[in-house]
Structure formats: C-alpha cells, structure tokens
Amino acid sequence: MTSIPLFDCRLDASDLAALEPVLASGQLAAGPNVAGLEQDLAAYLGGGHVVALGDMTHALTLALQLAGIGPGDEVLTLAYNCLSSNTAITHAGAVPVWVDIDPEQAVMSLADCEAALTPKTRALIVYHVAGYPAPLDALRAFCDAHHLALIEDANNALGARWNGRPVGRMGDFAVFSFYANRQVNGIEGAALVCPDEATAREAQRLRRFGIDMSTFRDRFGEINPASDVPRIGMSSPLNHVNATLARHRLQSLDERLTCNRSHAAWLDQALADVDGIRCIGWSDSADPAFWVGLIRCARRDQVLTALKQQGIHCSRLHHPNDGYTGFGSLPRDLPGTRSFISEVLALPCGWWLCARDLNRIADAVRDAARLAD
Image 1 (cartoon, rainbow, N blue to C red):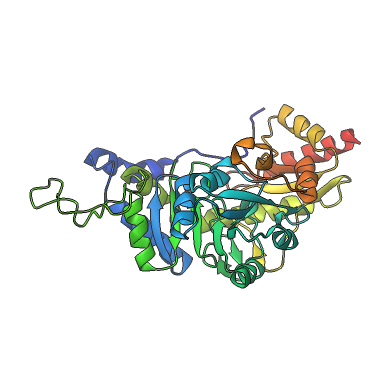
Image 2 (cartoon, rainbow, N blue to C red):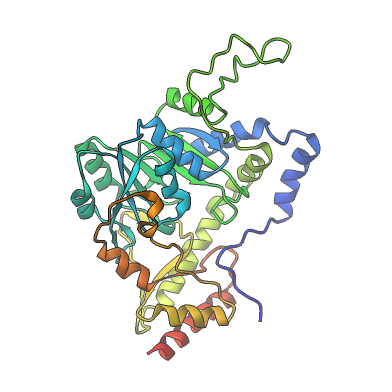
C-alpha cells in the first residue's frame, strides 16, 4: 500500500521546464527573476513592498531589526511554533515572551497577550498556525494601543485571508516562506513584506551585508572604495534558481489553494460525527490556506501511531519552544498550549490528494479513534 504524504515537495514537468533556461544560463546566484518574484508577490497581495531573502529565519530577524527591536527588548510570541520562527528573536538580541494559544481555533490568545505585557515589550509576532489566520483586527488594535510592532509570521499561510484581506497585509512586517513544503515551493527562500519603499530598500541592502548594490561597483566592475557600508547586514539573498521556481509556482497558487480548501472541508464533514475527534474551528472572518488540516484527538498518540502504521503521514507539527533553555525566557503558565499539544494532529489535506486518499484518511481516523476508546 502506498503512503500518503503530509506534504508533497515534488517538482513536475512544468517546474523543470521553468528552471531549465536558468540552469543553462549560468545566472544562478543573481538574476531578473528575484525582482520578478518580488513584483509578482506584491501584486498577488494587492500591494506592499516585498524583499526576497534566502530563508524565513533571516527574514524574521531582519523584520525585528528594521522594527528597532534589539537587546533588552521583549517580543510576544507563541510557544507552539517552529524554531525557525522563534530563533529570529534571539538572533535580533531580544527575548521571547511566550503567549498562550486558544486551543479551539489554534490562534494566539489576545487575553494572554494582555497578561504577558511588560514595560520591555516592543513587538508581537503572530504566527498564523498551519495557515489558519489569527484575529488580525484585534491584534492590530492591541499593538496600536500598546505601541508595539506587529509582525505576521505567515510562513505557511500564503493565500489565506482575514476579512477578505490577504494575510501579510495588516502587520508592520510580514514573512512568507518558500521552503519546499510550503504553499509556494522554491526549495528554500522567503519574502519579507515591508511597510514602505524606504524600509524595503534598507532590507535589500541588509540582506547582502549592508551593501548598496547601486554604488558598490565602479565603472570597471571592481569594488568601489567610495561606496560606504554604514550598517553591516547579513548574507541572505535569494538566489536566481530558487526565485525562478517560486515565481513559477506562485502562478498556480490559487488553483492549489482551492484543492486544499475543498479537501479540508470534506475531511471536516467526514469526521464530524466521530467520537473523540474535533476539527479545529475558525472564525467567519478567516479563510485558511490549510498547510495541513488540524484536528484534536482525545487519545492523540494512539491515533497518530495507528495512522503512521498504515502509511498515512501525520504529525503533532510543532514542539512548544518554551522548554528550550537557550531562549533565556521566564516560564509562563500556558494551559491552552499544554492542552493543544496533547491533542493536536495534523492531517494531509493538500492538492496532491485524490478522493481515494481522502477516504482512506477518514476511514483510518475513524478506526483509530474507535480502537483508542
């Protein structure tokens, strides 16, 4: 029996055809599709100033730095997230303050954001968990009231919407990922959405050591001694190959998202009457991108084990980051997070699935839930 993957990172014939001329050109590190991807993504989002980077951790680190976050500052963030996100806070020199999750809808708890505030709080990173949008209107108002930078960690939420607006357009900054298992597969890479053109130009300099590429080379193509680097940046430009693939995949994003949403709705209905299983709900204002389909299981580990034994890939998805001592954070009581991590299970619901796959997943969950009882 063939396995059913949680993610599908394969490239098809059209992807390979898009890459072929770039690979043959020799323009592998830099090329026109980097700027082309930035322009295409800005158009897809309906505006914004987009800067492409080599990976999402660097993009989030840069967002924090551009927002003025540094040593001594605190950043509100979910403990239920990937290290690739929360590590950026430490890279910026700040300290994460762990905020609880609402286990019913898998979104950041606004009440706990209030409780977690201190005089040192300078920013809030909202992770749109698995492509399920967080309550952006309320979080925007909260950040404005407390003079906090709002950074959307939309790394797996490209195409999701809140009140009809694209996720990534309500924060001061936003980050999307082009890692191989995201909605747009660039194998690796990320995009940083900046609030204005001047900030985007600064991000473009900082992604490449702080160099101003318009003056860095002289008329002979040599390094221009008169070109200063007033602020030292990082090395995280998106290369031309990854940008080409991501730009190509962006063209068919809406088609894939339509499949994701249809599959998630089908599974939601198919599992609605299964004892011990609850599908994650979402607000009427939210239109998720469904990186995965999230359910909660009373006996999650038994269900997870049974599905994996049948070749159905599933996962707890993230491990709470508040247990890692390297962050240097103070402990906080996070009952919603503890409840959520004990029950959450991520199921495949992506565009690569067929009707037979969906039926097999639903049948396996039903059987596993019954045996677990």
